[in-house]
Amino acid sequence: MACGLALYLGLGLGAGWAQAQGAPGNAGAAAGGPGPDAAAIQRGEYILHAAGGCGCHTDYKHDGQPRAGGRGLKTPFGTFYSTNITPDPETGIGRWSEADFVRAMREGVGPDGRQYFPVFPYTSFTRMSDADLHDLWAYLSTRPAVHQRNKPNDVWPPFGWRIGIPVWKWLFFRPQRFVPDPSRSAAWNRGAYLARAVAHCDECHTPRNLMGALKPGHQYAGSVDGPEGQLAPNITPDDATGIGRWSLADLTWFLDTGMKPDGDDAQGLMGEVVEHGYAKISDADRQAIADYVRSRPAIDNKVRVPAKAK
Ligand code: HEC
View (spheres, rainbow, N blue to C red):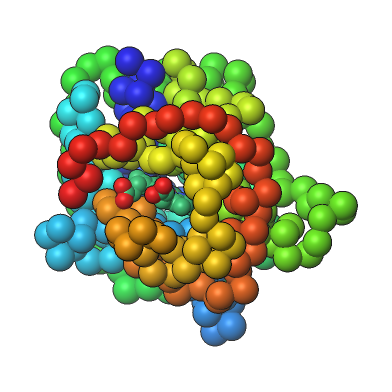
């Protein structure tokens, strides 16, 4: 049940953005005024890659346009369709202002005040810096607009109800920024920031409670609630059940290529976030992430990997 709920909560995001897009936003970048500068756009593309490429919004299977949405995400409750986050004013987020975007990313609230379901990983993105959100917006808001209407979700009631979200947030969510740990190196802090705020490893690899919230004290212990029903393995440094036997170089290489030390390669969503995201960031950043992940406490938790991963 827990996994179903978590999955449901996450994918409900689609519904939120779909509806939010109908609302008139403030004057955004697309609506005129001085556009973002080229350097910011370039940095924004890097942030997008560090975030795994925002692939949930691209329907790769059907050759969908980047971030135009329409990707069907099957759940036990039906199918949700991800939404258009290109700058199309009518069907995308072209009417959003930068402030609207920042609020959605940090607070999980749409321009019209709509509450987003919490597996839209604002629970992680809330830690992002002002500069990175600014740059990411600069990038997203200057991509080609794709006019593609969002598909309505095909979900059974009452699972589309947004009414409980404020309570959920009150219980489990606090908007916050990343706070560096002064006792650690700059590289470790960079890795911690990237992993937790941007690359959102936690969202897939940390198990969730009955309310779909990440379980405190179980960071990276593995989750049966992975998106699209995929199991996300234990990536703590536990020798038996985690990746304790992987070296720093193994993990850094995996984030670059998706290749595991045993020669297997990453499947499904992990394959995607590597290919469309982590593979395109600097080796120093991949190594910083790997260093941070390896510094987390080992947790003995056997997550059964599906017999048929492909
Ligand atoms: C969108 C969900 C998602 C995100 C985000 C994600 N992962 Fe994964 N990860 C998975 C899934 C699912 C698998 C299982 C892939 C498979 O079966 O091949 C996986 C597999 C892995 C593995 C292989 C473990 C093993 O024992 O085979 C490692 C290591 C890993 N992820 C690390 C990370 C790190 C580090 C991050 C953040 C930088 C991250 N992942 C972000 C979903 C995710």
